[in-house]
Length: 176
Image (tube, rainbow, N blue to C red; front, side):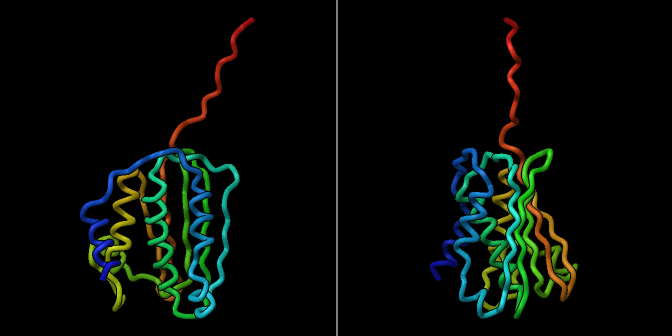
């Protein structure tokens, strides 16, 4: 009940973002290190982590971005009924950072895919339907985007794009 109330409040009245420059790989490592291992072992889920070394910093609220990615990651875990794989990947792009979370779960139908970011939409008996709605809202408030591709019985790919926090500029050399 507490979780339901917290999720609802996060969606209805989100806290204002406290942005700072963040290495998204640091956020991803925190998530990967806190994975619910018993569920991974029970379901026989393997995890592949591919973090780019040359990742740009992004100007975000680290806690909010963490929450958004964890919500998507939890959906990936829940989408795998038994024996599967999750791959998480970060990449630098010309405009910022791309985070990809791929699962080999049950997939999402085209009809459901149109609704997954709507509040209270869920296919789970115990779900609130707020996790992906909160993730979408957080990423959107950070001027980013989430896209989803999916094939039934093959899996789903969530792609998060976050704009660069700052551009590195080379200072002009002064002439002696």
